[in-house]
Every structure is written in C-alpha cells, then in structure tokens.
Length: 268
Image (cartoon, rainbow, N blue to C red; front, side, top):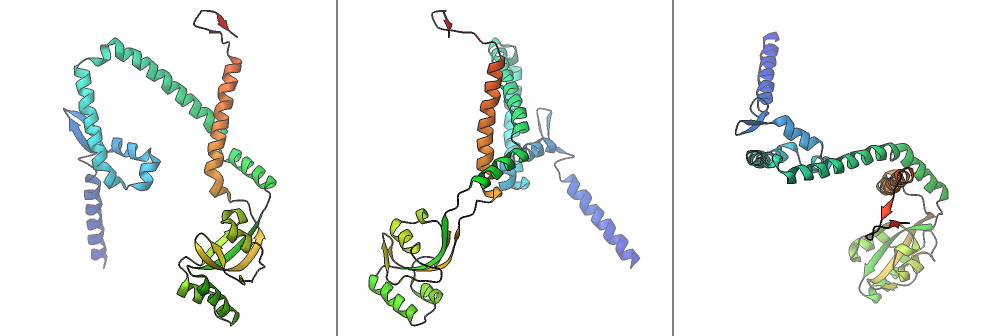
C-alpha cells in the first residue's frame, strides 16, 4: 500500500513539474532579436484588464496577446534603430504624454479616496430614506389574437378552469409578468390591472396593441427601493462625475489664474 502511495506521489510530482515547465519555455514566451518577452508580462496584461479576464480564459488570451507583444517589440526595435527617441518631435510628444499621465494618475488617486464603499452606501441610504413608494401589482396574463377566444377563456375560468393550464394552452406570451408599476405597461393594460383586487381576474378581455388579454392579479404591494447591488454602478458613476468636478473646481479656486484674449488684454 505504501509503495503504491509513493509511486502515485512521484507520478503527481512529475505531472506537476511538466505542467510548470509548460508555462512557456522556462518562463519565456518569445524572443524578438534576442529581446525576451516573458509569460509573466503576458499574464500581467491579462490580470490588469478585468473586462478581458471575466470573458476570456488565459489560454485563449495568450496566443493573441503574444502576437500583439511580438509586433510591439518589432516596431519598438525598428524605432530604436531609426533613433526616433533623438528627434525633437519625440521629445515634444513625450513631455505631453508625461503631463497627461501625471494628470490621469493624480485624478485616479483623488477619486479612489472619494468614490468608495462608504460614499456609495451614504448615497444609497439617502435614496432609501427619500424613496416614495408606488403601488405595484404582480400579475399573470393570457394573450390571444381573438376577442371571442379571450371571452371563452374567461367563461372557462368562471367554471373553475385553472389559469395556468389555459395560459399554457392558448397564450402567445409568457404568463407570469412579475411585479410592475402602472406606468410600466401600455395604458389599457395598466388601467385594467390597477383597477382589480388581489385574486381577481378580468371579467372581460382587455384590448391592447398586442392583442386581447385575460389578466389575473396575484399580489398588490408598495414598490420597494432597488437593492444596492442593482444601483451601485449608477451611484458610482454619479459620484465619479461629481467628485471629478469638485476636485477640478477646488484646484482652480486655489490657483492664481490670469487669462488673456487674442488681443492680449486680460480676460475677466
């Protein structure tokens, strides 16, 4: 038994070692005229791009990314051979790029301090405290093209037929509509649904542009605030815009700025 375990452990170690060596050639992804590109460089590009990471596995990302890295190195080497870095154009654009990068990083640092979980929760709690509820109904419906068929379905309901069975047999739409407010539906449907009581079904077909509906109301309640996870992106976006404007305003107020028009006169 012990020998079998040792043999298994050795085999597992060999497989693990082979897998580790399979990460490129000793960690190397490519060489371009002697310049090395490592697997770690490609991995870093993958890890720092959440959108790509969430939609594509690394094995699929790797060959395409590696092609991009190789092309980049080829062009960089050509630019170095052409001494592009010695040109005035390069130096001018480098200064512009450095200034833009510094601005970007500064604003990112400021926003990271202002747009955080605590700030998002504060806005959400304020939204909840001011939330004005509307009535919501939870309903099912049977949608058909013919008014006579809709009336016949209502007659069958009066005789004890099951709503879901009739919906399955006749409806050209999903029966369960979930919860909705009146203004979420076309006017004729909303008016009919919100004039009914819980457990009641429509006593005559409701005509809309979609056809003829037979409606049953399963529940009536006050609308609830949306969960934080559903509104977080909107709150984060709003806070980001607001914080960005605040940061820039504060910087402008604390700076001594003098503006001049094209005629050389000071702008007030």
